[in-house]
Image (tube, rainbow, N blue to C red):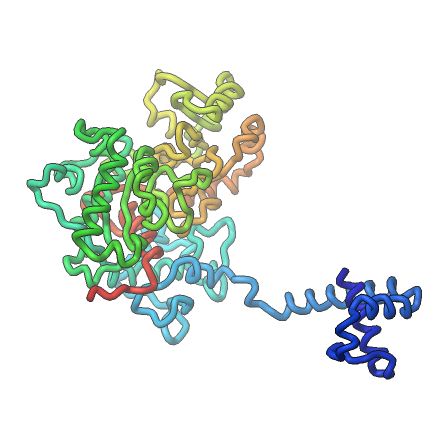
Length: 488
C-alpha cells in the first residue's frame, strides 16, 4: 500500500503542477476523493507500479543504513554500560556521567591494596593489573581478564568505601523476634551461612549510619533462615510475617513510602526467601533482593535490580595449594540426585574412569576429591545455586557450571569466562569431549585465575578487603539510587 500511495501522490503532484488537477483542499476535490484516486491510477503509465516501488524500497534501505552508521548513540559501548545500568549516587551531577577524575586518568593511592585485588597468591603484581591489558581506555574485555573492567572497579571500590552509607531499621534486644533482626553473636555455620555472615559484618562496619538522611540504602534486617526455624513463624508463616513487617515500617517511618521500597534491600540465602515475598509484592518488585537462589528463569528474581549472594560453606583456614600435576582426575561431582540435571549427569558418567560422578555418601573425604580433580562440577539441584562453586575455588579446582539461567555471583564485576566453564545441560553427554578439548595452556590460565578470584568467595570475621562481604557491598553500591529523596 505504501508504494501505491506514494505513486498516487507523485501523480497528483505532477498533474497539479500542470494544471490538470484541482488543489486537494478545493471543495470539488474534497467532495470526490474516490474519483481522484481512480483518475490518477488510470493515468499512470503501466510500468509505474514496478519502477516507483523498487525506487522507494532502494531509497528506504539506503536511508536506514545511513542512519545506523551515522547515529552511534543507538549502540551503547561497554565503557558506558557500567554507568547506564547502575545510576550514580547523589554526589554526581548526572546519572550518565562516567565516574572519572577531571583529568581523565586514574591513579591508585599508595595506600590502596592494589596487589590484594590484582596480584597473585604471593602478592606480586600480575599482567592483568596493567591498564594496557584492558586497552587504552580500560574498557575492553577478553576471556583472559579476571575483571570486566578493573580500572572502574578499583575506582568505584574506593569511592564506595569513602561514601556509601546504609541505614538499618532499629530493633531492641528485648524484641520478641530479636534473634531474626539482630546479627548472630557466634561464628555462622552451615550451608546458608552467607546470610548471617553478611549481616554480622555489615552491622559492625563503617557503612552503617544512624542518620537516615545520609543513607544511600535501607536494610531490612529480617533473617529468612532464622524465621524458618522459629516455631512461631516457620516456613508457612514467613509470608505473613514479611507483609506485616513492611506494613509496620511503612507506617512508623517515611522512608519506604517515598520510593515504594526501591532504595531498600534484604539478604537471604535459603530458597524459601523467594516465596517469602508472596504477600509483599512491593518487596519483590521494587526492593533489591540479595539472594543465593538467583535464577533468570524464576519470575521473582529481577536481574540487574537484584543480585546474587554467593553460597559459601564457612572455612576458617587458608586455602590449600596443590599443583596441577597432582590432580589426577579429570572431573568430579558428588551430591544428591534431586534434579533431572543431576540424574542425567550420573546416568551418563557414573561408571566413567575420568569423570567421577557420585551420589550418596563418599568413601573418601570430600576435600580430597576436590584437591585431586582438575575440574569440579557445579550441577543444579533443587535450585541453581549450591556451595560447590565456592568449594571448587577454595580448593583450586576449575568450576564447571551446569546450571542454566544461573545469574552468577558478582557477574557485574568478574569475567567468569576467565576462571570457569559454563556448559548447557543439554551438552552433558559431550562433557568429556569439551573438557579434553581444553589445552594445557588454557587450563593453566583458568586455574591461575581461580587462585586470584577465590578470595572474593570467602567470608571473614572481621571482613577483609575484597572478600565476599565487600564484593556484595559493591553490588549494592552499584544499585543505589541516583536520586536521594528529601526527608522533610
